[in-house]
Image (cartoon, rainbow, N blue to C red; front, side, top):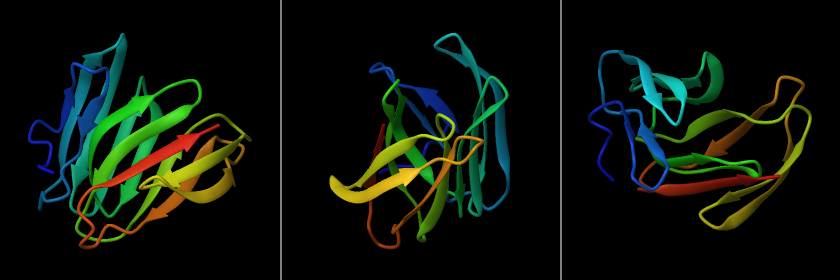
Length: 136
């Protein structure tokens, strides 16, 4: 998978791609209009963060490159790549239970906290692309 050279871009399939885990210096893109929303991304090798309309959506430590990110009423799904294993935090519904799938295998059920955040660990070192699906 190639990194997202434009930091944030929209796909014809209704998804967005963002982040660049290979950047040495911080980069930021604000006020990217897509789907009636304003998106903001900050990214580099140690962190990637995505916001929609000023609200938290995604964060990874260390930084990641994300392709085909799609939100729905049921949850989110995306493909992620990075140089190292990553801790990924996503914003979902508050105090709700979700089933987590990594590369089509189940990682179990997890519950969001009162702020709607769910934290997962993804093994990325030498893994190439890893698909993540989180469904209510």
